[in-house]
Amino acid sequence: MKFFVDTADVGEIRKALAWGILDGVTTNPSLVAKTGRRFEDVRAEILQLVSGPVSLEVTDMTFDGMLTQGRALAELGPQVVVKLPLTREGIAACKALTDEGIRTNVTLCFTASQALLAAKAGATYISPFVGRLDDVSTDGMGVIADIVQIYGNYGYATQVLVASTRHPMHIVAAAKLGAHVCTVPYKVLDQLFNHPLTDLGNAQFLKDWAKVPGQS
Ligand code: G3P
Image 1 (tube, rainbow, N blue to C red):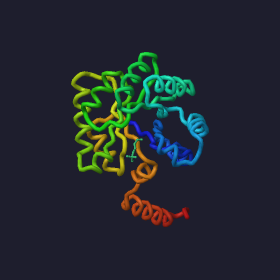
Image 2 (image 1 turned 180 degrees about the vertical axis):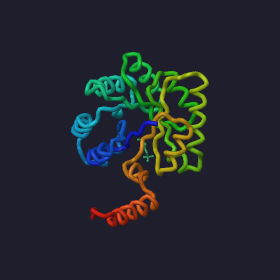
Image 3 (image 1 turned 120 degrees about the vertical axis):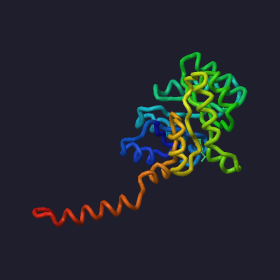
């Protein structure tokens, strides 16, 4: 399973890259707003740092506007994946941009039936939001299971990108279901490392190593 970091914060991206386990980045308008910086500056810096897929989202909600913005974003670099909302216009734009050879990530997906539309439109990625479903007492991972099964039934090439992940168990559940990608907030990526037995064991190894003759 690929790991993308779900952030527009360049500092977080640098730290995640340093671990050597990062495959790509996803952003959205809210994450860009959180940086307090201009989108043009943020995306240029991300594209300089990251060689894997970088999702950049359109903000014009018309079909023509999505095509214009999507083409302009795709021009910024080979890593760019154009993120489109799961609306009627977004799905039509997904089909048109896919036909032009531009990679797409259809976002704000909450049901398997919506995911089916994205696959039929040739989306590179579908982003179901598991955390936001869990927030409204709906089983987010159940939706992932349905999508993985449906895509498998028909051999759709669209990759399931589990989004709106909130804690390490979302990542484990996504991997058990065979999702292609998880996009993970930096804080949750960092949490994946943690186990008290790792820390205790390491401390003990170092303590014992100091007793080995010739070591200190
Ligand atoms: O980037 C889309 C998604 O991951 C947003 O997550 O936490 O705002 O529901 P969240």
